[in-house]
Length: 241
Image (tube, helix red, strand yellow):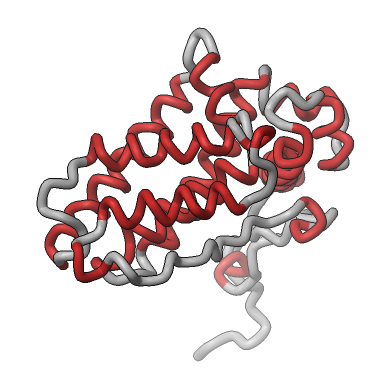
């Protein structure tokens, strides 16, 4: 006969009691672990704000803008900025990575016949948006490994887009990847010469001429796509992660 008053066997309570929940809402986590999780989250948020601020400041004042101004725009201290980005080259590489991430996402949304032109338009908009940034990259010595990685990713992205354009018959059969990079360099040269021809009109005209030179003849009269990428600002990222 079962004894209803029998004391439960030691340890049986652990089969029904939930694991303790500590700071951070992680079952079984110690306060120290939860604190480290929050610190890593805050660090990622601060880094994103710094990169967004750098993109804005470089746009306004060029790639030689004071890093202190970027820290103020991001709402972080100088020490926080330098912990994430020990020098200007590292910060420029992060801005390029943010742009390239956006380009790779955008490329997935366009058909084969259009993706190369959309990439060239967005790259042109980036060159116009942050004049001098690519020059700063080329002059950086020694070259940052992350910059090299971004360049390799960009080459791959444009190569895949060019292959798609060839498959769809959107570009002339003799267009090569070297031609695509030459087109980008030509637009960069027009942007650098803007003091002699102010405004965006010469750049838009140069882009039109470049795209027509790459297109198959029956597509030469198509309108030039408009840039459409939007990058987050420090304000949009907010003050809380």
